[in-house]
Image (cartoon, one colour):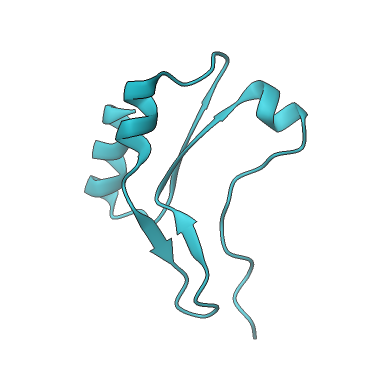
Length: 71
């Protein structure tokens, strides 16, 4: 998680996602609490760093990100 956070900051990415087989540990969840990205076109807030398990994905939970920009 720490490495992902460093890459997200270096690349100036708005959102980073870690997909894991195992449930995230408390330190991973703490590291992921890096604030929120606010979409400039919709004003919606999305976690800056996200941790999803494969079980989350299979259960239908996905990445929290803004929809496409209106035309």
